[in-house]
Length: 175
Image 1: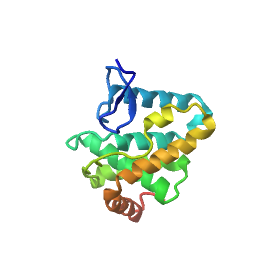
Image 2: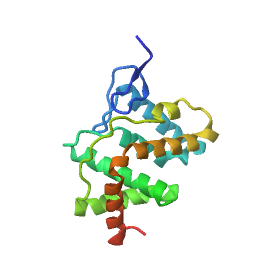
Image 3: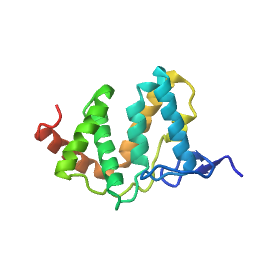
């Protein structure tokens, strides 16, 4: 048996084994395991922790679930909003959790997020590149590049995400 397979969602080189995945972010079991190992590193070692929101946002948008699953649809929308604010509006990483929480509450009442067509492919970095790195000095840079690549993959929907963000701002829900 090969050690690696290609993740059916993000295209990453993924560990090859059977197992459980996320409840609504669809991924190969080995890809999801690599994501969890990266999260463990970020939770347990301050040198990796700063990149956490890039990691979560990039992984979530590279593993959209079924467009009929409202949790999956909202997850993609919320993580795209976070990437928009981080990459296009210069939001400090320290405020990414806040923007996600506040936008989720805003969306719950406004129901703005709608299913978006998944990109045909994800180019650039994936969880494999981050998982395969053991240099804490390179971790944040890799995760930021991964987040930028994941954001770019959704370019067909940038205008929609920008609209959601502007409505969010216009209603004074985020300052």
